[in-house]
Amino acid sequence: MSRKSGKYTFIPVLLTFVILGLVLAATLFFVSDIPTNGFAVNGDPAFDHSKENEFDFVESEGKNGVKYYVITRNSTQSTTAQPEDNGGQSSTSTPTVAATHSVNNSTTETTSSSSAEPAATTRTFKKAEEKTAYLTFDDGPSINTEKLLDVLDEYGVKATFFVIYHKNMEDKYKAIAERGHTIALHSYTHTYSKIYRTEKGYYQDLNKIHDYVEKLTGVDSKIIRFPGGSSNTVSRKYNKTIMKKLKKSVTQNGYVYHDWNIDSTDASGINRDPDLLVENVKAGLEKKKFVVDILMHDTGKSKTTTVEALPRIIEAVQAEGYKIEPLTIDCEPIQHNW
Ligand code: ZN
Picture (cartoon, helix red, strand yellow):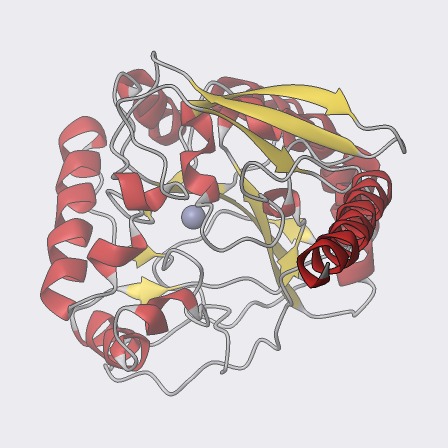
């Protein structure tokens, strides 16, 4: 008798849990409306945006009109990435993962003041004599490089490309230099775990991209940008004090590192709305800094809206009275001060 009553108590309790579980699952499904079987690109430091050219992106729309991208690793692009560089995806398999892309996501990277740290070398910089804007493109070259160069030509302005290694792109590195732009160094691998674990690892990588660029273009570049910027926090995961050391030692080794003080935010998602990129640059210009360094990216399929926005970005910069110049070794750098 007592056994029977125990059974009768157990079943309703179980049913209650099942119903509660179903209600919770349904709520999550309708509220989030975003696939959760992948990693989020926006704001997820595990996803290294410099590797975006190794993926194909198919735009999709969720039930509440939230856009997301189905990301598939493509087989034709460079695969310098190690598994840990791309959210744990193996570079040999062809996984399909869903990534969220919130359309109205606000900027995830903050800009900084332009005050520089005291330089450890005797290098002297020329102060800009007029309002000056540097257009900077990170992580290229890519299938967009040519298009970016064409837009820049159309406006008769020169930019700066902080390049990384991509295979089968030799002509694009050359085109950047031959068409009068500054080819500067970002990283060979852009793999945080390699470059920010030890100083030795950082320099091995830097020397590799330096020599690769020099071999292709003849340019002995000493202009660099740290992956993630000098204020990045991802490096702390590998070595807590590495950025402090590197900022000092690159300067002592004759390099000049540049950050930015206007972020177009094109790296904060995949093919962000070009209007938003233009608006972000305009908002940065309104802060009326004398020298601006505008961060954009040259990463192929995921950054086609950067190409789209570039004419309006150039026009906005010029309308504010800025002269657009390429970075040179004696330009006073914009450096994040934290
Ligand atoms: Zn980068």
